[in-house]
Length: 531
Image 1 (tube, one colour):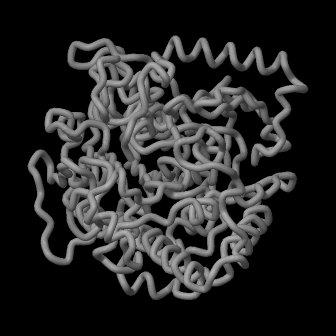
Image 2 (tube, helix red, strand yellow):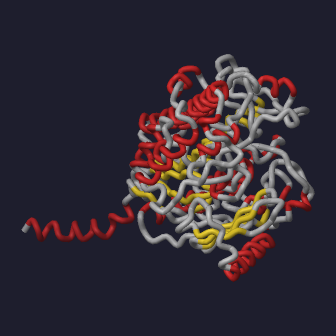
Image 3 (cartoon, one colour):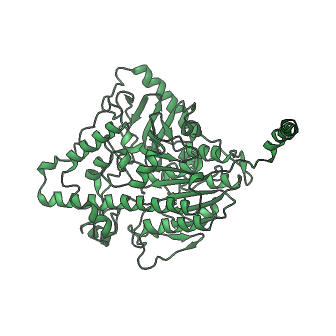
């Protein structure tokens, strides 16, 4: 009798319950971008630097071992933010204004940012950190879809203030749409995270949010806090040769590198560690201790953001993506590019807060283990980034994936997570179709279509990757080299002479892309300057 009475009720409930259930809650999305950090500079990618928060995200999330950026600061930021190749977004080189639309130096009106796109799906949008895709107030983050912003509009500055480092240069810190004057005790990495934590804390609970957390760490100048530097005193006394070998071994043991990946030889411009004087060794150890401390402090602040998510009950419904904007930087502080006072201060120990220095090629060669070359170039040392995706409710944990992904995929991924669509028009302007593909199927461990080909160009340096094959050249030689990344990820054996037809096919793909993307030969543009 009870069963008979319940049957109509159960049938009715089965019929109406799907309509009565609330729609799935849209996840919060956080994209964290490091600045000038090398491929092997965090613990889960082989480093001796202490990054427990990132390591925890890697252990309980997904690591993509062959993820790519655009090899330089603002081109990467333009591409990441828009889901386009940087030329299509108007930042084909740096932030220098040029007459060519693909090189105007700020985001154009035929692209949308992730913030602008996600607002159409009901998201509140926040940003903290480095902008570097448009210096005039009409191009600032609050004009490109962000509800709140705090950070550095420009490319680089002191971590303890906002001092210019080049002649006739004005650098700007901004809070929303107003210039901001740092107070006593300011340290950039902490300040950026302070505001990110504040934005999360003030966010309405009934609405999803997007946060773009763009740290300047560990971009030069080498500035760190004393308590962080102290952790790494003596950690680099072994020298770069042994440290590269140790990182390489850990990367192979963890599965980040396949077993057939070789460690590239030490850059031939760098001497063997044993040939250095004690003074030279001490100087490099000091630089590395400060560099490591900068990454350590960034990781601490990532921990603060995660703790705020937990305190506000949003940790289980938030997806966090972490990557770097380019490979490690070989740059040194040169008197021809910098103010005389800045150059003089670069001679001070890097642990001195008034110093303004970089760790140069000798540090970058370690950071980019096992690859060769650096930021600017389109070899793996310039474009390969560690990539971590973490999200308890979405990302299947404990995996390393060797398939290639690219910063153009982040827009499509965010929209997929949000259940949104990429707009064809925005504010009356036709929008260039996105180039990326969503990473969400890969996050969930299901079938992922990936890319037919990926393309790279920066100041004449070029590359195209299709499958396991990569065609690459450096400017001004412009000679194509061919590598099989399945057997030679470190790009040590050029097989172009053995595979002339493949070179021809990939070069044709590259040429067709340049026409579509608006790439102009660098010789026609002239040399550019920037971070």
